[in-house]
Image (cartoon, rainbow, N blue to C red):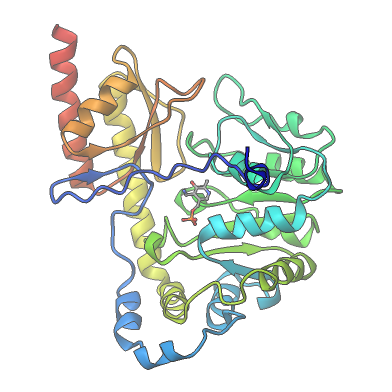
Length: 356
Ligand code: PMP
């Protein structure tokens, strides 16, 4: 073996969902928003002066940080921004999970959590969800090096009541707890107000889902000034200019259009609730999701078979070939029309396959 090979940082990377590009496809595999961003984002893009690209962007991302602070009623010093919440979460790991003790997260959860732990050499111990796919708060009372979980959880969609979130945070005053609220706008209560009460809490959110801007890559964290200061120190030791000026303007514009944000979220929630009922009538079961996706299992047809059949029809959903969830499909809530096509396909497929 050549010597350099011994020193390579070998990792098993995160596998992102496919990004196929077929004109007739229905893309329900990566929890994107089926509606466009606010018209104010289009306007901000048109108004952007490309000459500005000669210059480096504002390293403090001031226009976006200030807009987030205003929208959420916080101080700018309590806001950290990054290139999607993936970047923000990775920075949190790097900054806060350095005790050498295992960090804790659920066994069925966002599949990036163990990837970051591995790439940064952080030990971890995953905690099994209960038989209803819920987080058991008592599992997070043991000694640990930090805690991270999504609320609602992904890919289950299950929401942990705020009292349980607080219970976990309050049992862990000596480590940082990260609540990943990528899907919180679709029905849950945010833990954001708790940052005043707990100095060990970070709440992470994203523009990728409820604000229809996955392609812009904007994520953010709220926490007390000290935590945000530590995050910025690590960011500036890595790359001062994580976010480009164009994205900063578009992000700030999106935050100004509260009415559009609310209307889009309401449409998705209404579609989600309708599709839950229609899927149940077709023989599917699912945990009660508060995200913009459903995690479904059919009473007789295996998930893998449905996944392949849907794919052939250019309907993309997500299948995880992993213990405990290998008979489930995660389906993003699309427009009503997309979901009707999805349901019609399932109805016909199930009729055929149950007859055989
Ligand atoms: N957290 C969870 C739970 C997610 O499902 C996702 C989306 N894949 C992310 C974080 C990252 O989202 P983004 O980087 O687009 O903000």
